[in-house]
Amino acid sequence: MGGGAEGAGFLDGAAEPGSTTGESEADMFTDSIRSGEAERRMDAWLPSEATRQLLDGVVAGKVDPAKVDPGQLTRPSLQHLQQQQQQPQANPMRDLLVRFCGEAIARGCAPNADSVPQDSTGAAQLFRAGCHRACLDLLARLLLQHHQQHQLHTPASLRLWFARLALLVRTRQLSTAETELLAFRNLDGPDLYYEFYPGQYPGRRGSMVPFGMRLLHADLGGAGALARLYFLSAVIDRMLCNLQAGLSEAGLDLPPMTAEQRRASLELWQRRKAAVLYSVANNLATVAKDHAAAARVYGQLLTLDPGNSERICAALGRLSMQVGDLQSARHHLGRCAQSAPAERRDFYAAQLAVTSADWATAQRLFRSALDSNPGNMLAANNLAVICLYTGQLREAIRLLESLLERQPKLAIHEGLVFNLCTMYDLESSKSVGKKTRLLETVARHRGDNFDVAAFKF
Image (cartoon, rainbow, N blue to C red; front, side, top):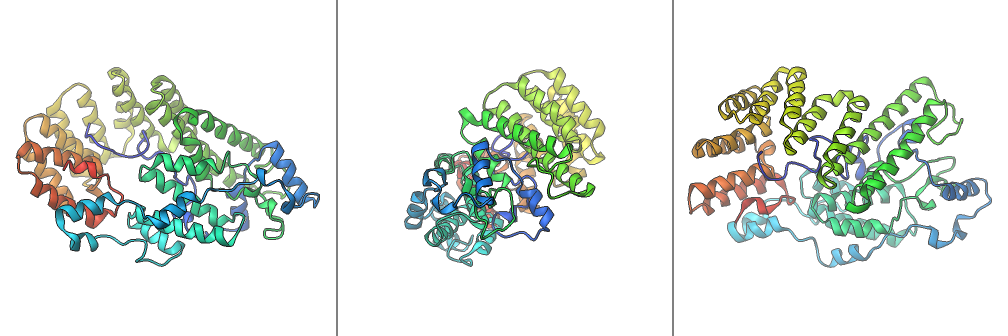
């Protein structure tokens, strides 16, 4: 209910492709201040046997990194970066503003790649402003500068690559993201590990590749995504077994870890395991359409991630509704209604009423949920849709317009804007004026990464 896009993951709040799953999003652009132990914990990874042997040879001084076969190394393609420097990202939002609102309004709505510092600080500013296409332009410049000055990777360059790939996904440029990821192969090249650079990082071990980039790499590309996600899960299982056996994630007994350090490592890798399983469940539900398998994975997550049991049960409820299993849907949503905080109980009770087509009760409960939590945009969107279904078109429009006026940063997303524009079309054949005003509102608050199809011009 409440059409349009609501997020990348089937489970609201699940790790989406490109999420950092343990690192802050700012880490995509800047060096984080971490202790040596925290750094070791975040960077830990198990290379393949062939890569491990080569890295052991470098550490022992038996292999000269400069003489390693170039075919074993990772050389990302710069072709797309060079093309983008010559021809910046298309900006459908700005094009629409120029067409309907004029050049002056379009020019003043959002920063671009030239209006911020030409470094990772500027990229972070564009990211926070929602100007993801402009951020991609700047990241292309920064990566070209890096690779013109350095032949090999650094942690900073790989963070920039991760940011670029994640933003390509967020801006729905999936084929470009897949093409650029091909150059990184399976993210196991020896030059992606600190041990390959004993001069720059003496004594440091682990992967320079952010974990979020590994998850994004596994999740992209429909046909092989599940196999890659299960491989990622298997590697994490080995690392957890090593930790539980009193070793490091990599299976070493050095350096020694305190009980607190081991606990922190276990917690981090259990969270990352959960992030992978959320992506597995999402893929099973939305790509493979294997709803029974998706439900089993969500069942695993109830044990692995009990702190998110409410949201997992809600996902199971939605999954059951999709396949028409209303009895299971009522069971899962009922569990949510019983365990949720008071301000969310009416929301789940309203969804239960929807499974029985009890629109009057659903409307009353969604309204109560919205009164309890004015920031619950799903309750607002669903309430508006029910008003539309029950012939209350003007009330539905009034509700959504009021939300956009009072809480624009929260209320502006593609699903809600799509629904409101649909209602404008139903209300009058002269809906362009209202849509144009809505376009200006969205442009003031949402940067350049907004699906303009939601406006239905």
